[in-house]
Image 1 (tube, rainbow, N blue to C red):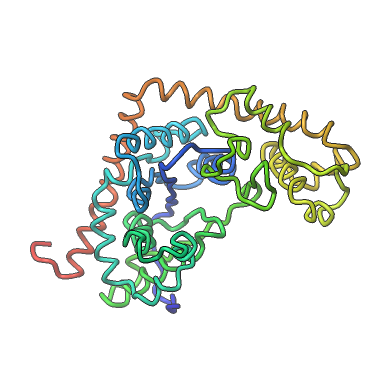
Image 2: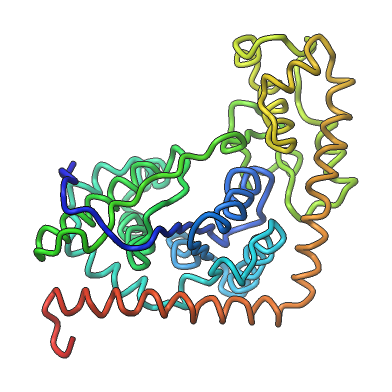
Length: 344
């Protein structure tokens, strides 16, 4: 990959992230992303978008897409994002994302995209039938980040390669147009506890909105009874909880439930084991169910309240898109000038 040594970027510290509106959000999204977004808004200038341009790399029902966008926005708000602090907006409402993405497609090299493992995983054996967008979306992701000159991006393991591509594109643009330090080299914010929540039915598979079993996940819109039922029906093994993290790691379902408890309680797995080692799931699961209901039921209630008032969500999204454009437009204007476009 490209050598990133260059004049360092001297602009403001900014964080950017987004979630696709392609189905109901669940506990994994909440602990892995949303609560972290809410914390980051107090630490730096924060841009959080609904990734509707990314969503259409695979078919989406056009009648459902706008409503799914509102649902993601409602989840952001319910998780504690404050539209006065964080800029919350739909990606497609800020045209500079798409405009910069085309310029970056001409900067990025085919060999870089050929190395992206996510496309291989998502397209499987049907590569020829995948949309071109599914192949090139990491370039759009680079534009999402760099149009705001974001310096920090929360990433899970599966997105680290895409952030490296963003750094490559930034470095090559800065070099090719003789503007060292114009685009920053965004740093990953590696997600800590709660970053990887597994299925309640299979401790070796990530919790997913596409799993056919609703009992595999806790949806953010689940009510208190549904949350408690799903925790109590979660798959476990017959042994009591162990004393050490090494023993726990060898038991995926137990490890997942202890990890969920730790993330919801703001504690470490070791601290949870200190309280529950030697106790069976007949003791642990009710305690986890109570904790999950206490933390998550209010989120669902707040989401439902926002979704009952789509006009308010739309107002927040429109204001966010306008504020995002105010930051993005000067970047694209300067890029056009650097590239040599007429009238720029």
